[in-house]
Length: 280
Ligand code: GUN
Image (cartoon, rainbow, N blue to C red; front, side, top):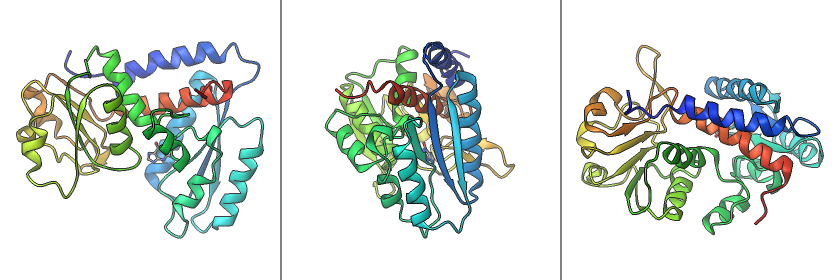
């Protein structure tokens, strides 16, 4: 079906490009992943990153800490990785256990290795239009629209969700791409009145199948960033796919939509970190 934006296929094309480039390097790029605690979803995302890394020749080294790990242990590990010349990119898998200060831990990653783009330094650079690394999910969404020949300039993009990881950086990238952007969130009054004006509706709120047909304009493009489990333990997005399907011109599925692009962009950023080609 032509309406479905097949993230897995777009990601495969990127994997091939990354693999070709990696095959010409002197050593495999290395991504260090700091994983703390036993969050089931995080463990599964990290497995996906290892598997994707293997496909393209990027080594994903996981440093797995128990729920009881102390902040100083984690900070010491990150310092070691910062100083290790054979580690190109570092990510701290989120969420962290609540006794760890997320800002302190994330910001201890050296900015030139911050391939998630989550440090305050890189977030600041992003908002001034000069990021070292663009955050992976927002970067992946813009890429999938480009690959699907969906024009962004002059469109009204509505982003539902204002997180630092997705909603806010995504809005920034759309502004940069000459879209007109509205940001909605949990305190927005009459959400439907705003979302139903969207030419491109992006949803990242973490509530299963929240967006229904009434929220969507006929012919809209819908990008679903959510990953939730329904009552049958099936993966579903933040958008009720079946409810909106007839009305939309394009939609990303869950799974195999945005997720594979996030991983591709993480590998792409790791390759950039290896090459050191990120300063403008
Ligand atoms: N947790 C959920 N998504 C992400 C991500 O893209 N990066 C990291 N580090 N943690 C996450």
